[in-house]
Length: 256
Length: 348
Image 1 (cartoon, chains in turn cyan, yellow):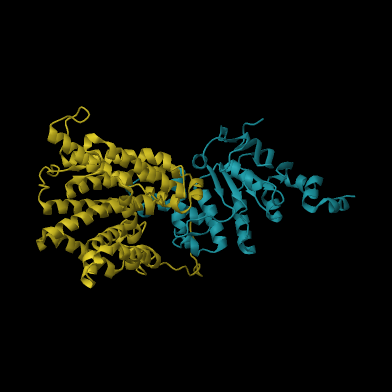
Image 2: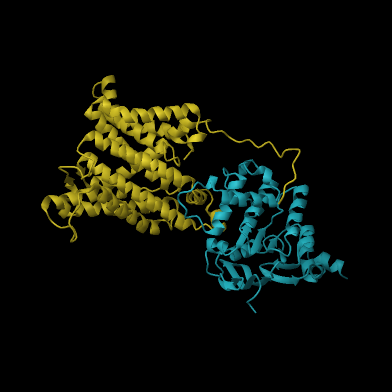
């Protein structure tokens, strides 16, 4: 049951003291699929993302990436296997330019960080590829701008450019739309939609419009448990999901 | 470490003048000046090497005296065995400078890798204390090592064998130290701007993010720590030759502290800044007592009371150290003015 697919998490459990943040969660992301993970605040989404990315070790359960078990691998090793992630709060290197950020992502993915001599800023092979990756997300004009001078939306785009530069097997996006404006959000949704079928994605997002537009499949998490998983049409009308989001009383009113 | 091309004209001219002064200094003909300048160069090399770990790598090592001392003891132990005509671990001792440099780099670098493999699993204050502990361990080892004169150390009757270069000639030895420092600044600069240097700085600035990009921050740091240790060991070989002496004091924590002060004073993470830190600190240590005595006889004895607050003031008011003050506003900053209105279509 636990093999196949690009990403497969099986029976993951993570406890913090008495709290079970993730409780026997299993999910799979098939190749080329956009799989959204939703749930109210505190449902354990971020914990689950961190279990998959390798920042946390599960107390129980296992994780596979392209058929290879990665449960015990370190974050960096998982990244080199093609697991690219973006962070909920843009996490960048302040003084580096956008182009340097993408170049760093490339060298990280290629595992070429132990080259001691050549000047990375004049490395044409690296730069050409980095420029192309920036152009993919429409940031080519900001190539030489330090990350700290970019707008919030541009930083999110840069995060995506870095993740895409890693030629990901799986893209792990932790709230890519959080805190960005309508116009920039729209652009991000279009960017992500354009990647459908090419890159498998696990998308954690609060913006339900975006989720229902993008997702091929949705998994709903509450109190660390999966309460529903399936195509958007199914999830929209799922009684337990409606209850989790709208609260007990309203749900019974809405569905007499 | 800044690129030369990014520095202001005045600063570049200043650096060039300083280099010219360094090259012409022996022509002054004062042996005391050459000796002092040699000592400054050796400590500048050690401080720059420490900065690779401390400033560029974000690893606050309080134990770099260990690597300096190991390098120095390579010279001292070989000298002692050569003097006695005895074997060293079954091998004939070597007085060759080149071999001693290689040995020192291997030994100090190896010790750095070994201790770094353990200490780099910790962060912050724990890392500082562990590096200090390893260095003190080595200090007590050499203090108790009767075979090599324990706390008394080893007085050297002559310097290492420099082959074509006669190291007994103070001027030749001075130029050797200058060459070593310049070589490391060049190599260090390449390292800083290489992919490795980028990975190292990324690990320093945002470790979690760097790991998510596939960078093995632990290994990158460890390698940088090893290189830093090896170069400090090389400085140790030069130090022993400069002072004609090797003793456990070279491995003691005040020496580690002194190197730290040089780096912070000069400007962390710049490699070239610590050279100025070493210059200023050693000049102050040398001339501050006399200067104070000339103000009021007897005041010179308490020069440390003046030096301490002076260092605190520099640390507080000169963020980025002396180099930060020198290079301020000289590095051109790119300003982002928004996307250009008319954008040519691009091929993707």
